[in-house]
Length: 159
Image (cartoon, helix red, strand yellow):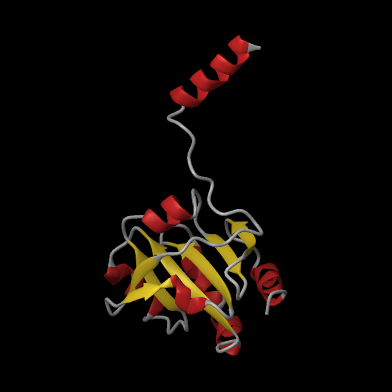
C-alpha cells in the first residue's frame, strides 16, 4: 500500500503537479477584475443580481462566428442578463475588430495574460462558457462550440 501511495505521488510530481480545474458546478465563481475596451477596470462583483454568461474566447478558436450568431439572442435579453465576452490572450485591436466591427451587444473584457481564464477558471479549450446565477454560483460549464440553439436553450433555463 505504501509503495502505491509513493508511486501516485511520483506520477503527480512528474506531471508537473496538480493544476486547478476551475470552479465546479454549484460552487461560487471566482472573483476577478479585468479591463474593458475603454481601459476601465471591471470587477466581477458588478454582475451580481442577474444571470451572467462568461464566454471565454479568442478569434482563433472559431468563436467569432458563434459570438456573431448569438447577437440577436443576447440583444433581446439585454437588461435581464449579463453576457460578457472575455477575450483570452489577444490585443485590444483584435477584440475591437470582432466586438465593435460586428456591433455585438456584449461587455468585452481582456484577459491578456490568461490569469483569469487559465488561472482562476481552469480553461484549457476555447470557447468555454460559464453560466453563473445572480448569487454568483456556477450553474453550467460548457466546453467547445455548441449548436447555437442548444446554447441559447441552456442559457434560457437560468433567466
